[in-house]
Length: 393
Image 1: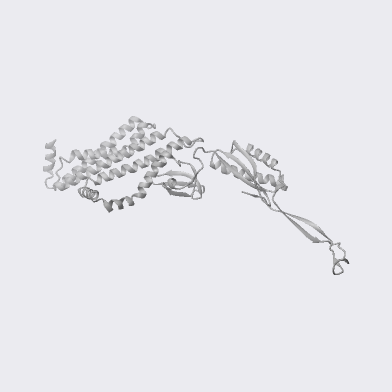
Image 2: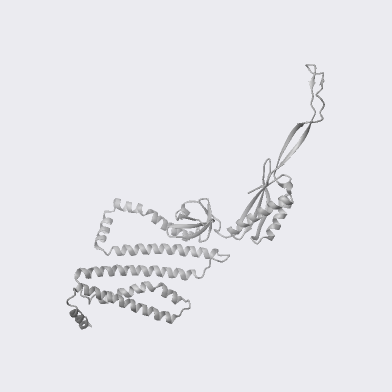
């Protein structure tokens, strides 16, 4: 093998040695890529096109294995390549950095495959998905935290292979003091969000697809990243909130323990309203609705004022979206019922107005008063009732 390489070097004696060395390294990389491609093709033919665990592993490990083949080929060729000392040192340093990056890459892919394999047992597109959302949230948040830590460790290890960076790091740790304090303060938001991510994964104040109210906006938790949360609002906008928000500030979670919710419908009716008939109509409306889950139905007089009586209807549904639609349906049908069957239950404004009588005789005068007389006036009293439109919340 050595004689073969010596013959090649003699034949290319007129070419600078460093160019010959780089060409040999490049040929080794090309050969490694060809061998890798052939092996992948053979393995794919053996496995077949049917989805399987081995096919998933092959797809996830294709790029890291390609890099590993290239590094192995360069490591075999470098001792034989005629390279000068500076170039050989530079290539060696590059290979060390590439090996560290390869290890970090493999670690990230391993975490990703393990998380994907674990989550295959859970589905969030079913009706009762509370347990699935719990596990999906935990795994995704912890996976992003692990990925971030792996990247930080990988980059730090790669930088420490350079003498200048290593010396700077040693001097920085030796000096400590203000430099360390400044770096700590600068990294506080990132570290705070990472720690908040671990807390959310463990305690789970929010989960994927939880219905929440944040900053007076209603929506669903769409994504929990390593430093922020994306909330999909009801009108398709996206609200991006730092992870620390859900640890430090109060918010509403409508699906914390279960997806079922109780919604309320407020009606303002007249004092003459027949509450029993309205309650009966509410029950019939819910029995005909596909949105009602059959758990809660109630109608109560919760307040009164000088004009109206306030009724509150409580209805339950399977989830937040169904509860909203059910409230709207109940409100519309109760209003239609009041307008057609109980118009006397609509809110009214009442007033007493005194009007002079058209048949009143001239005002007579009679004696008996201190001034010899007084005046009397006859008239009629009319009641005016003004109907107003019903109000509902």
